[in-house]
Length: 114
Image 1 (cartoon, rainbow, N blue to C red):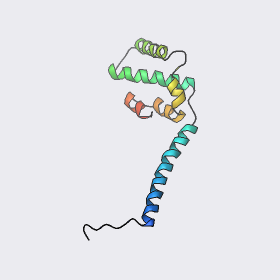
Image 2: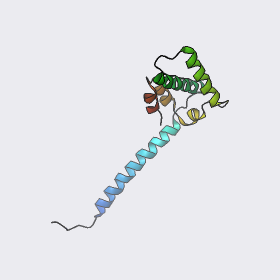
Image 3: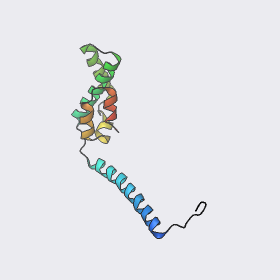
Image 4: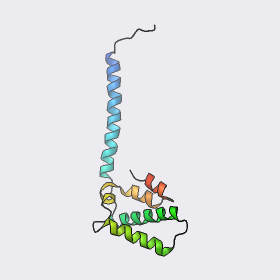
């Protein structure tokens, strides 16, 4: 009957609450699992930085000289400083870094990272 609404029953409220709790649990569970995941080593993070620099350079210059690649990698490592690629070690998982290291271009590498 158009225009007629019915009051929410106890079953409707409980079903809605159950759905909300399931969604919250899934989101919270993923965050917990991500927090417990293995973190990459400083060497893996340095390799990730090198890979990213190389892929970005290759996107701009399809056939960059080896010396140019080495120079850009050195500049990136210098910019990272003594502490290294801190975000990588603190925020990324080993699986994300492994995915990024296998990427064929900078866009694919970035898709591996949160």
